[in-house]
Image (cartoon, rainbow, N blue to C red; front, side):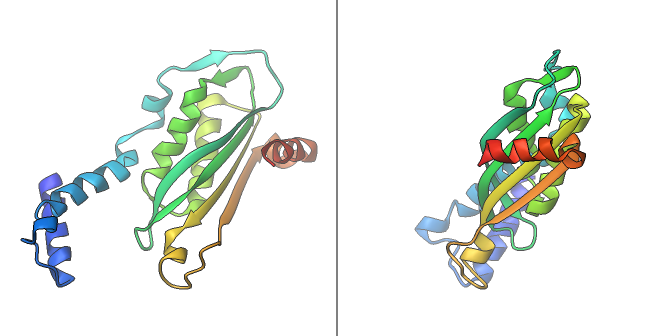
Length: 183
């Protein structure tokens, strides 16, 4: 797959008018192909593999919040980066998930061609699937290079998206508690 991607990058670079044999570009197609495979490695991951049995019995019924999980993704419209942070809150239902698994779930969905709104929902749905939580809230704040480097070129813009499921959606005090935690 890397060889095929490398050939495509070579064609793109040449189409831009560059000399693919120029010293600085000789190995660029292979490096770009390898980088793209890394940046989209989420396609090769599954929730089951990521969770890997790290679900633990617990009688805690209070909200658990994980804040400021950094994320790096590529927008599916321009294949330019968007960079931000994800906040997750959940109300356990007899099971808790190993802490590092939240970051891995975020990465699995971020490392795909994405739009932020869909990624927010995918993360929330995955946490419900993995834990059976009574409620899940996910908020993502990100800056999008497709808006900063091209088009309207607004350097200080950011986007916030949220998805609330279960008690986080239906119970206003739970939602407010989560939002207060992440402020």
